[in-house]
Image (tube, rainbow, N blue to C red; front, side, top):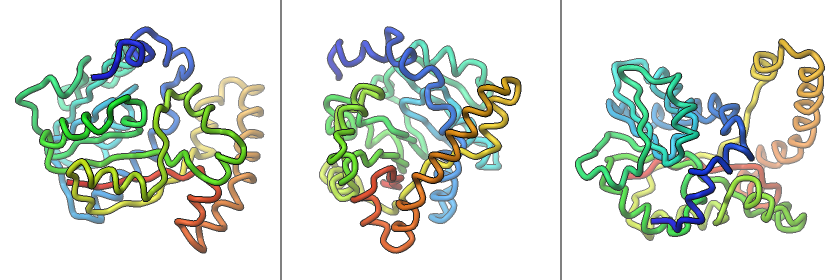
Length: 252
């Protein structure tokens, strides 16, 4: 279990203050990658649990994208996150305030861990304790370590803004999962893909903000071009040098 100080960031409102949208803007592309990874491995879960579900939007979109009757439940230790989830709650998508490890009889076809264990002090123990809670796990891991982030001194920003306590490369992340007893079945790099449609929908009633967001979107797109170009040539090299990339892993 994490120390009181570490958990306080997520229970006392500190994380919500730093991240007022709780990353809901990232939910569409994250859910899309999850559904694609499941489809290409012919995995059709009927019960899904999102551990550290945050605002709940990834779980909702994964549920809707499965296209069949499925039962989904999200867990989070943050009361603020649970309050954000409640508007998404319905008969087949529910949310609980608590730690999945304390649910002794809980078992699911699939567990989602979307950008979670880099926040935990003892993530080795956490991963071992939840391994038996589901047959399959889909794990999203930020690859914070790259030549760019190290040279520009960006790692401390990940800690200050997002509470990241641990930093990974692809090779380190995959080896760590194997060390704690997971069988890695498949993985894919992911890239944040906020669309112009999302920018428009979020800001259309506020023209000055919309213009600022559009300018920011254009600037981010231009900055991303070198990394995307290198990725087309060598995926691993792009992730190691340029950063920005994350890893989505299917494990058992």
